[in-house]
Image 1 (cartoon, rainbow, N blue to C red):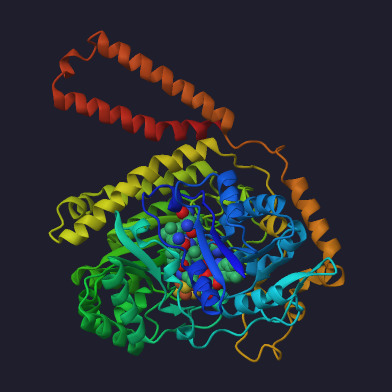
Image 2 (cartoon, rainbow, N blue to C red; image 1 turned 90 degrees about the vertical axis):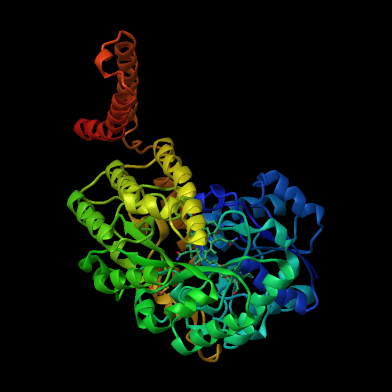
Length: 601
Ligand code: B12
Ligand code: SF4
């Protein structure tokens, strides 16, 4: 079959701000499997440009595929773009097979199949084996109901088959590297780069995590074969940077050590970056020099929060002391630490932000990545947050970099001020500036400079977007917005024989009794409710007040300039005094307007 894989352009800062793009590993993974099954496969990557949607639709049609396959790593926020492109393709090529896979459709298959009649089928869980079976069935016209791990429409009703079994031997499939031109892909400041995956899943139980249940069980590839593949990518394709997609690659110390030693033996100079847990770093204190020798340059540590009560709420299973120690050990071994820091928990107050920032400072990470709480329907945390009001009803913004839920004690603008202030303090403190510009290690200096360059672009972009975009004051609750909690379906695949696994319908949560009785009516009612809520009748948060504040700022600027020109500051005309005034004005305009907004409320 002639198959076209499509990576759609994503509107998020992760895709739009850097000049770099990474290969879409998920699509390459299913591409490799399909090529080996004898299909003719091509990839269109719409992230370059980015391609405008009509151009992308034309490019897809020009390839005259028999099936178009969509998937995106930024899956929740990427969905509306996929829906738009798929709709365009279905109009231009009626009857074409449109297949969709990835994390978001794995769980939201009911709504997608009900709302998007052009989608032929959805692959639930990891795709390599299931997509082969599905494409074979589409080719021969055989029954889809016999294929585990898919959802499709039967007699007009969305229907899921039994969950597919997890792939036990990850080395049984290969990545379709031949689908990409390596010279187009880069990361870490224009260095040729790829995304790879040593392991899938995570044995920990953080209740907000949207990934652990998707992969269902932690498994890893053969460490030696994996190291050989990285060396091959370097020698054959000039790859310099390897970004690990793993949730948690270091779970097994034995397997990890074997991988590090095998890669060191290959003697290739690669820069490795990825995520792991702070407790694994502390556990591996005795082999961290091997991490460094193998090429590790940065680990992202999901600290999420420094407040022990919050860590317990989200069942992170982490301790503040361990996090701090991991950062210290990494610095000692010349590995950068990036701490992710999540804000937007319901009861947060100014004091919590202040304390959190101070503790974050005491951890002293090299880089921080600030995120907003963004619950996924299939996680247990969703159930805890189900009654929180949604303030962002545009799904494209559910990308962790936009506030989506209201907090009880703070309006969104104040959460934003703390968010930006914390970033500014952490990245702008003398130590961080020293590490960015005067770091003795050239490689780390490059990494720090690249990251701070990104930060300088992201910082104003996010503030601008906050004022441009609509936040709603009386939004629906989280449950009204997405539907009932779906945590009973968190594990997307089966670890037993698929035919013995409980059927999906049995695992539906109680709230969805209605769904069991009449899925079509349930989905229709749910969407009617959603659409009623989604109208633009809500107040736009602070818009009017913001306009007043901005007008007052503008008047302030004009007055200051007039004073300046009339030599009112004559005695302050030395360069250092002028700098002082400018600094004062800048501080004034960055701090005072939000305060005014607060007074106006
Ligand atoms: C690498 C990465 C990136 C790269 C993207 C590189 C790229 N070109 O894809 C960069 C740094 C650009 C990035 C950006 C963003 N990312 Co990111 N990213 C990841 C990361 C670390 C790995 C993704 C990956 O490659 N996984 C491995 C592949 C093999 O898995 P997969 O894509 O799911 O594919 C499998 C199945 O899903 C299925 N499948 C997938 N697609 C399809 C299609 C079909 C047709 C079929 C049949 C099957 C199928 O089969 C595949 C093989 O089994 C994950 C975290 C993680 N640990 O997964 C976060 C993650 C995907 N990112 C996330 C987010 C939020 C973002 C951003 C929105 C952040 C932002 N605000 O800017 C942007 C979105 C832009 C984008 N391009 O994705 C979230 C998504 C959450 C969600 N469920 O929506 C994740 C899960 C992080 C997290 N812990 O929450 N990201
Ligand atoms: S440690 Fe990370 S990947 Fe594992 S469950 Fe927690 S958040 Fe998810």
